[in-house]
Length: 172
Image 1 (tube, rainbow, N blue to C red):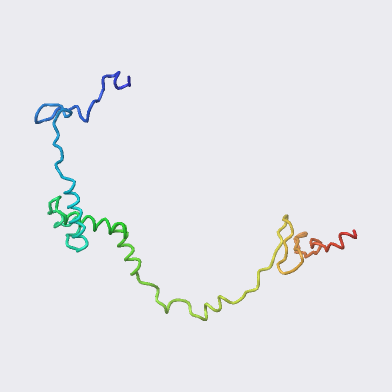
Image 2 (image 1 turned 180 degrees about the horizontal axis):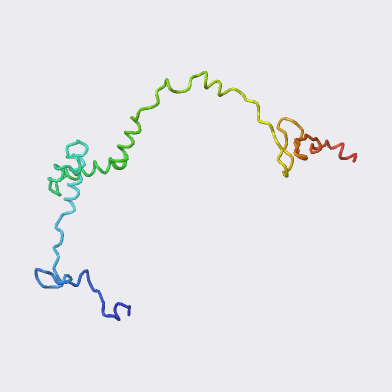
């Protein structure tokens, strides 16, 4: 037995309240079976598709669309159009923001950098000076075979970190 069963809170159906019209509990109120033929759905879909392709339907959620009967194929065609637009473009706010971004005013060409300014920026600059830091290992100077050390606050280039050729090491 569950905790609810022990407390007397068994729930046997959708609602234990009495129906206002008949006084019977909601579980025993007879429900009407939907009456439709599967062929009706196929016919509705085919008609809606034809109207969608022909473009003969009101815009989804417009007053004309709301006035249509739920079984009207033009209503389904309007919903198909809205679903297809959602698939392609997303929600309407994001689409409007995209249109605003695409059509936004750009910086005028005359206020941008000139070709001479761009050429000056592209010129080759001298590389920065390599500085060894106190307390850190020596730094290899690019393009040379020397190593820069910081000895007593002075930048000193020494070559003792250069790998020696093999014949010097064999002789030692």
